[in-house]
Image (cartoon, rainbow, N blue to C red; front, side, top):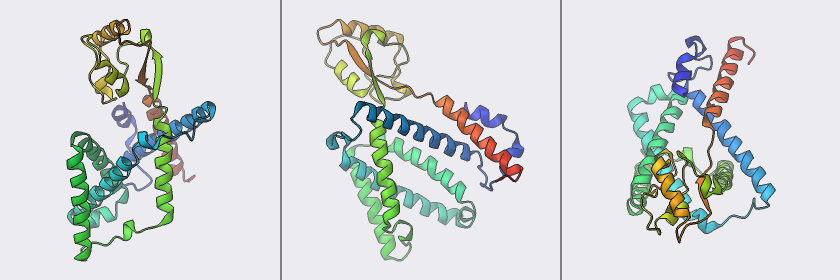
Length: 266
């Protein structure tokens, strides 16, 4: 949908903000910003309404895993940016927004890689990454000016992590088992409950993404599971986020900003 909308935007509206060779990436930035803020506000409202806003289980959140994942991302992004600057440093220095777009896709790739490697390889990669950065620093090939300790960015990171933890608590919805429908996405905890049953054809995918969407056959199996010995009257599914709406809003905001820039309003 985003690709089709992008093709429909007149070329003269790309772009008056000097965003480099990928001005359309600004639409992605706006879309994800709007979506994130909307989810956060919705989660805060739900937390206040349920009086459980600050009830956070540290064990369930996995503080150690979050910290290590953050360190892995920082080291990997630092090394990737070093390679990019060696290959096209002068060009990227004049197109920082283009570098941000590249970093965005690198992060998406790293997230996919992280899901497919074992914890042992993950820990080893994190240690090796920081060891390489330390060696480069000692050889005076790089400086840590960009990641020196500064209270403000650390507070921002902690704040975003805290908001994300709150939002993730409301990513799920409990529904009656009889209401389950095709293309719904079961929560991983629900799929784990299915593993104890002898009913055939139950879902096995626990990725909680589009790959885990229920088929018609799996829905029939879940309905049979409900009436089995280990069945339950309710199941937990992943809440549907209408991302098409955010794409529309993000595109409209982008166009309004471009028109205002064209008319020299901003």
